[in-house]
Amino acid sequence: MPLAPLLPPHLAPPHGLAPLLRAELGPLAPPDLIAAAAIDEARSLQQLAAARELAPALGSNALFVKGIAMALTIYPPGLRPAGDLDLLTTRDLLPRVCNALTAAGFSRDDVAADASPMEIPYFRDAPSGVTLMIDLHYAFTGDQGLQAALSIPIDAILARRQIVDGVPIPSDEDSLLLAAVNLVRSCVDRLVLVVDVARLAARPLDWNSVFSRAKAWRIATPLWVSLMLAHDLFDTPVDLDPIAPRPWKARAIRSLFSREELLRTDRERDPRYRFLFKALSLDSWGDLLRSVAAIPRRLGR
Figure 1 (cartoon, rainbow, N blue to C red):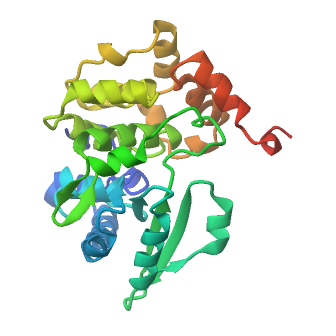
Figure 2 (cartoon, rainbow, N blue to C red; figure 1 turned 90 degrees about the vertical axis):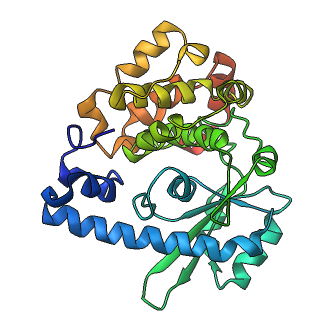
């Protein structure tokens, strides 16, 4: 899936694609892209090393999700950068995971933790001066806002985990579903999220399980959005019919994502995406009503 026809080199870093585009361009890569890619690759390799270090202490109590899971399965080492490490656990197992992180030298960011209904940030300063960040998720979607109707069964995801290079991560099917949820939540603010979906969809997945879980989790539409973008941008071969939304909704969502629009990285601040796109990405009118009712009153003031 070539990136060069779609992505100008100066936009690769904010889209999380500097290492991948640099590898694609080879000796034709411009100096600024080479420099940005080197920084991202070093951080990615540091994160992979930290995940391997933490895995034995975490045991079956948590798994790594999002960027680190992608880095371990669908990218060569160093080519999938991420801002931080993401861990997923259940509320019941949360104390064990917190203890493991503290024992490994991580400190809890109490101020940020108090402000979030679904995660606890941790950090650890490295001798090199680089700070390693971990977001410990005890929910994958918040119970306030336009994803409140979604039902992500963390315990089942933990039970289906796979071990790659010694690190616990979700099954490929679950990684794809979580990627779809994250893509909609972030309003597709980086093209690397679409590349993740395209690469996962090219793996030998159990598509019957993917589609049945998507419907059970109430994320059939986010999955359709993710696979539609992967198909339109990278010709990812996938059958969208089992999860296709009503034609009017499909047209409305497609109208928001021209190729030029996808190069933007500020959609989370645009009301069309922050509210309209997320509302369109809900599976039913009932989900919309439940999600709107869950929006904190202060946002409407």
